[in-house]
View (tube, rainbow, N blue to C red):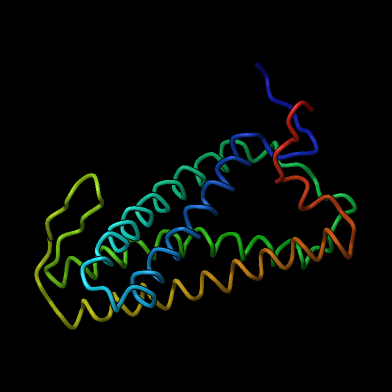
Length: 186
């Protein structure tokens, strides 16, 4: 089956985009539940921390997969019609690049935090032992990077989503529709 350029992203890119988005939101949900909602219930939060670690690892894996697929299928990316100004195109490109970088950095910083703290990394299906020297000051640095980059990622998601919605509702172009799944039966 040969691919050709259409008015939508290739199906695999659409699926990976939305799957990654769901994984990212679940990762934030698990940590917020564990940290802020379930603190009065000691022991119950452990499951939610495990889910946070597991989903964070999945975000890392799927971000890597998305990056490779994006590069392989780059020539099939549909044009925005009507076109956006060049500065908006480059701004959107920078935001997308930053999203990839932060979704590589956040899980790596989380792993290095746990490793340098001397803690295991329990990914629900497998436990990884710490493979580096315990260094609590470095652990705190990696934790700060993990948390602050996670907040930066939320801001980038807001900018990305806001830009797409602005283009859909105000500029009335096809930016959003390019990444939406096809309706069943069409």
